[in-house]
Image (tube, rainbow, N blue to C red; front, side, top):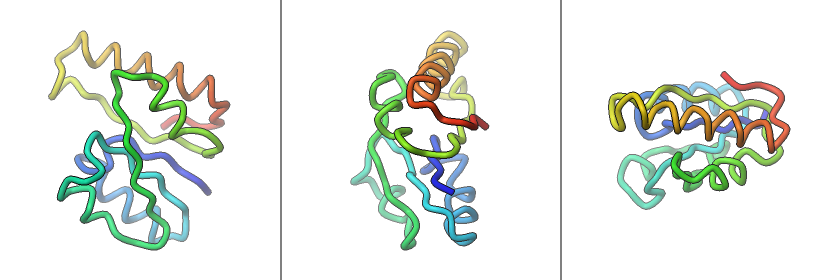
Length: 103
């Protein structure tokens, strides 16, 4: 399985490890691929990619040819209206990239 994990350097960091350890290829999405949290994501099955949830196109590009997108809310960082905008961007990007599963 090819998975895109949004929040890979935060609340879903453990999911990146679990999926990679299970042999799945993971695109670990982060705003800062050069940051220490992104550099700590290790494994042959992990590819760190830059994604900005405010830019739907960056999500769609990262979601190209994946089997599943894993995402969580962002209200803790951007508040309710920002969380709604991010959620819409994620859904629209997953739909445009023909992703079969959004978790």
